[in-house]
Image (tube, rainbow, N blue to C red; front, side, top):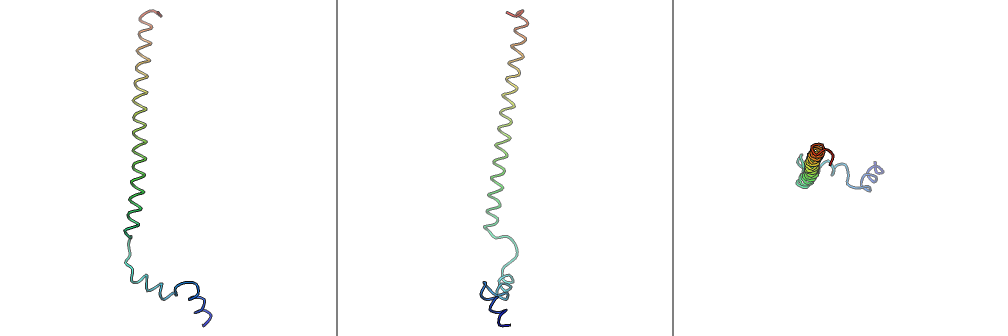
Length: 82
C-alpha cells in the first residue's frame, strides 16, 4: 500500500486530485479551443476562396483566348489565307 501511494504521488498528482479537478471543471470547450478552431476554419475558408477566384480568373482568360483564336481563324479564312 505504501509503495502504491509512493508511485502515485511521485509521478504527478494523485488519482484523487485528478478526479477532483475533473469534477470541478465544467464540460465543454474552453475559449482558447474555440478561438483555435475558428482560426483554422477562417484559414481554410480563405484558402478555398482564393482557389475559387484563381480558377474563375483562369477560366475567363481561357474563354478570351478561345474567342480570339476563333476570330483570327474566321478572319484568315474570309481573307482567303492572306
